[in-house]
Image 1 (cartoon, one colour):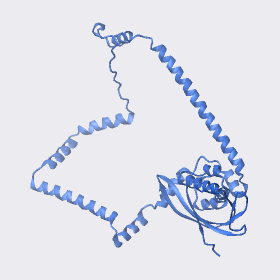
Image 2 (spheres, rainbow, N blue to C red):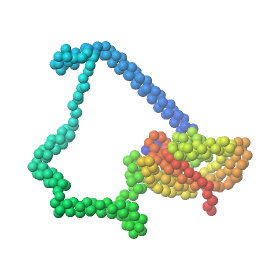
Image 3 (cartoon, helix red, strand yellow):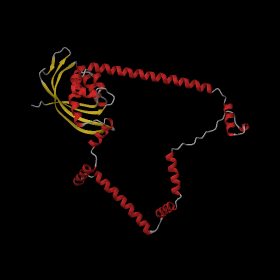
Image 4 (cartoon, rainbow, N blue to C red):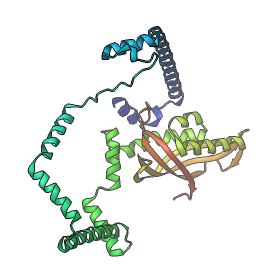
Length: 330
């Protein structure tokens, strides 16, 4: 946490992409070596177990049958050599399961319980007109409740819609509150205001610099799913055309958290921001293809981010990446 505060305090300028990638490669290699070691140990253990089982299997099936028969006190003459019997194993119950079982047995023996059970069965089978009519009324009431519930949940009538909205506001937990709660289960120190500051001061500048320079290896470490595929497609197309983005981020002119949602069961935050860039496009020779080095471009970005617990430098992983050029705001 102290390292994070220091990092954010220094801003994106303190981040070195080359050192970061070297550390990530070293960590990956260490993880692969550890996995290989575990696999080797598991294979050695399996081989040792196989050898032990092979030594124990030297007994003949007749000897096993004789031993089992002697344990059960059976007549060996009636045993068929080489046959084995099914062995039953008594289920082990916990103390609470045993107590509940004993309590259930006691209740079932109570006279009051038996009388109530018999009465309920008689009412369910009774042909008495009064009883039958009562059963019908109860069923009608249940059906009416289900119909009302369905109407409440599905109706598009303005009055019902408004009443449902007010009810959700007063008594229901908003989706945002629920998602923030889920994020706090992962990161108890999560704060919505600090999240925005961290994005603008640290992650956004670093990621945009890597995107404009075409550093796909780095971008793979902080993205997944659609975002990883979109970044790969955009940078691959740029390289195929022989284009190089000559860009420098001037500032984040707008930032907003659009929504909190569960995406495939994962707490996700959607952010929208506008980056103001000095932007032009050059070819492989360095000649200008589009724009001028002093031109300013506003680019609007939309990201979906989820909390990451594995990356040592970034608390968030991008799962959706979208962008579009917008008119320059004066």
